[in-house]
Length: 387
Length: 94
Image 1: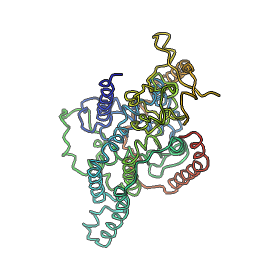
Image 2 (image 1 turned 90 degrees about the vertical axis):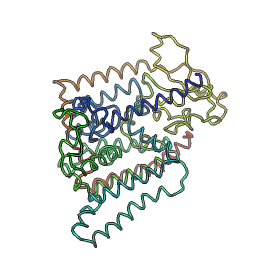
Image 3 (image 1 turned 180 degrees about the vertical axis):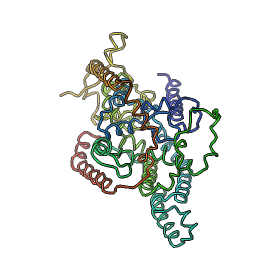
Image 4 (image 1 turned 90 degrees about the horizontal axis):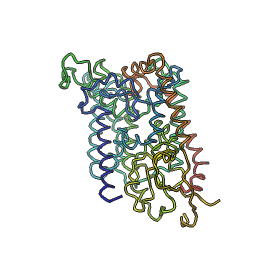
């Protein structure tokens, strides 16, 4: 592959990721004129919270858990995800997932703009503690207004200890680390089996009064795309949010504003935990690529089983691969995998970085061999060990 | 890892074509089954997506018992990894 073409592929991928991010999260409102109420019926092929104020589709993880909580099998959601995975493998993780894109961005700009991210996070935390209880039973604002200065200073001290400990992680000098494939397998199997499948089927959620989606309670994507925007939007009068160029009688209402109520007072310990987990994850992401995708994402786990036979997949020709002597694939891989290693296939998100940049052209994108009957191509070989 | 060229032999690509076709058939059956009776499942997804998901946002009370169970099980999984997974990883050079 010519050099120019190689990097063109990376550029194309980044643009596709950006477009998918804007489409999936609706964060800049530019897709507001689409009828999202229709798209909300369909689970998207990526992890994005359906409580995101402007999310155009439903969350597949939320959909599956919801059906499990009501004792039904999610035929459509599973079938849809499986269809995408059968054709594209985990490609939607690498090319479309908004949370994956955020993880890529955090890792990529860890050196230059880490402090901007930390300052922004700190500002958000201060604002949330001021307007919402977070860990306390009242927001700091109310304590101050009611002149309960003892409580007020006590909680400021506690918040400084809790969030100070979390933010201090960013000041530590920690080397970049890789989450090993086996360790990652344990993590994602745990998160898939326990909070994603078993707990929604059997455990009641006191906040809902029914069985609950327990993975959502831990999900950092929900915190980033739903909890923080909902709390920020909810902090301002509804009049401050014009309909963004829509007609006054438009059926489109940014989600969450339609049921405008004071949700800030409801953000207590669980909310504080979610915020803390997000900060912790962001710190991990500044040192390890796509840690959440590798270690915890249940949608990625569902997709990964299809990587072995999907229509589009990446394989490595071990005959020409220089393995440890080269390791370019490992250095550029957003999932930190060595493509030639056993067990790497299920972690591959088919971003095609290795296909584009492998100096020996050992990594290749292939289609299933049955297509050879229709479209003849050079016979590709996968090396196998001698027994 | 030893020199690769000495250790490997050529072999035809494993043919996943028929697995792919079976998977495709199963997924289409699942989707069509989900769309039965006027797309009831889609309506269910829509109804849930349009409610403000308390769990996603992290609102409401916290159930420490269940979260503790999740944490305990997580530790058990990780201990299992330390005991068995580490050896597997070393053996397979992961």
